[in-house]
Image (cartoon, rainbow, N blue to C red; front, side, top):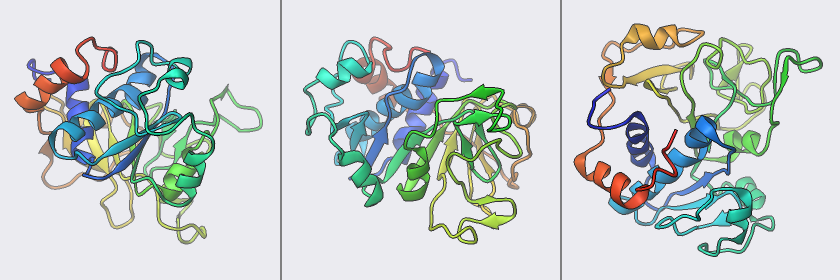
Length: 267
């Protein structure tokens, strides 16, 4: 990894470049530690970076707040602080979010999970047999709806063989295919994840069968390192790009304007 930027700053810049002008992006609340940074901190920083550079019309739905002012953040990024925070266009969510999801009102969502497979099926429900699981996870939340109704869901996960598996133990959110049948053959409409942003590489589903493909390697990361961190082999293109590094302007904004106290990108 280039010594001039941190891994989290690289991921923030990649998130920003996926955001288009006038996009409405959903960001959850999260818990703490690395899970918070992936699911909340990096998405918020990336969304704000996009607003400041190329997407001034982009906005967010953070937790239960529509269009929060991302030029500043509450002291503590917990549910209670967000509930009492006044820097948003709407009051505390009274049902807008679910209605907007069903009406396909979101362009982007940020999702994460315990497992994802080669076709983008995501599991945040249980590890092992559902009836007698080894681990009972958080449950579905709104992630099934994200993959069904959001135009470009973005998965944020660190590469790990336990997380990137041949077949998820439980399908919380339906990807592009399952058990040899496409979404359409299962009776579902368009959907599934758009891109997977990880700590070592960027992956997408730009293949004929919509299976996972390696789009780019982060600088200093080898193909072997990525493959060793996955429980299946993704499609490997003839030419593998290097993930573009953050520009000096992006780094300046991240460090001085967006997250000077490392509240969002601390882990």
